[in-house]
Structure formats: structure tokens, C-alpha cells
Length: 429
Image (cartoon, rainbow, N blue to C red; front, side):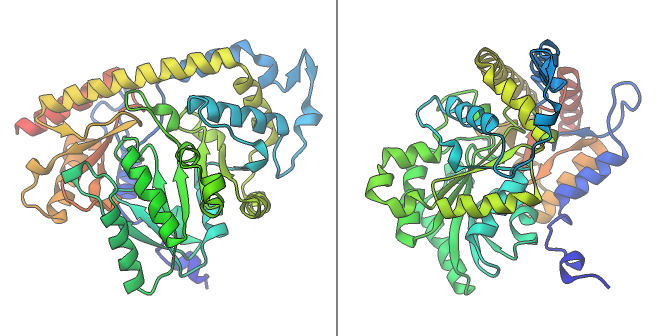
């Protein structure tokens, strides 16, 4: 006998997003061992600048070995407190400000550490929304949000439908429609969660979108959660503007302190520094009650003190972080241009983007009909016959069939060229 939580399927892992992973795991591509295997183009992992991190690690063996000036700090690093190491939190908020052009400053006392953005998002939902209440989420969105935001919290997700006609931008009418849909379902809306830069589109929010979001949150008296895990991946104009900077521009702290205390940021080092398995995530909030509650909840997903010690040393090296940010953005832009060029050779176009580790690809012309059934058939063909694991738009709750997400930062140039050759051969057939 199992609990209803264990036996239900609200985790969302029965979608094509996770099915693609399973098939890839059974037949992964390898240039020598398995050259006909499936190439993973669903993994939004930044592997382009591993060498920069590895170089720093080799030059700073004391930090890796839990030493300072040659002396062991092993006992100091054994200290575990759910508030986090002060030195690490100080360096972390400075790094967050640096990524945002130092246009906004962050108080380390308002920061809560968590074991990755997944844990941070769930913890924040636990703090803001009761079971049976709702959060609004613009489409297309990360399929894992069904698990992260819904599964254990009992919260409902109401999609804010966005469309290709305006580049999938968030409009006031789309927000209002989603709010009305929630009311029709007798769901109380507690907030809206956005990813900026977009986790699916690779775009940064426009000034108009930010204005719509803030105006809407004021009118409905709801929270804004801004997931900004891709903030450091912006490689082209327009630049990235954090929700906190937008709030400061509107003077919300003085003119609308209510909303100022209902704005929360989720961030991690997984994408920007390419450290997903270090499991370093965080919540930033100006709301003391949220910070206090989230800190207590963080006991269920702490960041190890050893990891904090190592990364506090890395982030304290301002010369390294400056070099990394600049070089990483340059590499991302170059790799993205390679993907876009290869797709065009196959007769495919992408949504114009300036950030992220992926492109949102228009394959509507390859559908046998304008339906999600046709999209699923196309996705399965590309996965099983072409050997490329991409993300189907339907799994991202896209409002239109025919859009797929394709990642580019998790593979070598040679592997990307092979993937583009396979796709070109498929398109010609």
C-alpha cells in the first residue's frame, strides 16, 4: 500500500520530454563507440566553458582540498547551518549583481540557499501558495515545472497562452484571460511565475512585458516569481533586466511596498557557471516572512558547506568571474550561430533569441497537419529514425503545434555538425 502522492502521476514525468530522455539513455551517441546512437539535444547544460572552471580549480588546489594558506579548514567546512556560510552568500549576491550590470544590489540577509533551482522553486511555492490554489505560468514553459511546482505542493498551474504571431510575448490580455480561466475553475490565483531569460524561447523580457507583469500583479494583489537561472547566458542585445531592477525603476519600494514584498527571484549556478551537479540554488526576497519560512524549509535541501567553501573562493576571484562571463557569452553566441546556420540549411528557422542554451525552432512546415498529433509523429520520427532527441512543443504546453526546442551548448562542435547533417538528410527526404 502506497500513499496517494507516491501512486499519482501528477509529477508530469509521463510526458514526451521524459520519454525522450529514456530512449536516449538506452542508446546514447558516442563518436567512436556508438556513432549511430541518439544525439542529446534536449539537455540545457552549459558545457562550453568547462575548461575555464577546470583551469581555475587546478590553480586553486587549496580551495578544492579544503585548505587556506596551506592549512586545513576541514573542521570549519564541516559546519552546517541552514542560513548558509556568510562568506559564500556575500560573494553570491555580488556575483548576481555583476551579472545584472551592477544596476541592482542584493542583501545577503534576503538570500536563502537551496539544493538547486528545482528545490528553490518548490520551496517558494510552499511559502506562497496553498494546495488547491493556482499559479499562472506563460507558455511555452519548462515541462519539469509540472513536477517542481505541482507534485508535492498540490498547487495548480494555469497557463498564460502566448502565440507566435507576436514572438510568444506576454500580453495583458493573455494574463487577464488566464486569470479568468482560473476563476472559472474556482481557483484562487496567488501569483505568476516567469522565466527571464525564457527557459524555452531563449529571449529576454521586453520593457512592455515587464510593465504588463507589474501592473497586473498590482491590480490582482498577487506575487511575482522571476526564475532568472539563465541571467548570465545573455550573449546579444537587448541586455537582461532583472525583475528587481524593473521594480526599482518603478520605485515600488516606496510607492507600492506591498508588491515590493511580493517579488521573489529564483537563481542558481547550474546554467551560468555550468555547475548543475553542484546543486546550488537560491531564493531572493524582500519579504522577511518568506525568507524566514524558506530558510527553515531549506533544511530539506541544503547546499553542503564544502561546496559553499569552494565556490566562495571561486566567486571571490573577480578577475576569474569577469573573464568567465565574457568568454562564456562569446562561446554561446558562436555556438548558437552554428546551430541557426545548420537549421537554415535544412530549411528551418528559429525564433530570434539573445540568451539561453537553446533555440525555439519552427518546424510547422514539416507537419502532416496542423495538430499536436502531427507534431508528436514528427518528434518521434526525429527521435527514433533521425537519432536526435529534441523537446516537443506540446510537452512545453506550447499553444501551437510545430515548435521544438533544440539545445546546442551540451555538445562538441563535431557532434553538432553530425546532428545538423542528420537533420539536413531528413529534411531532404
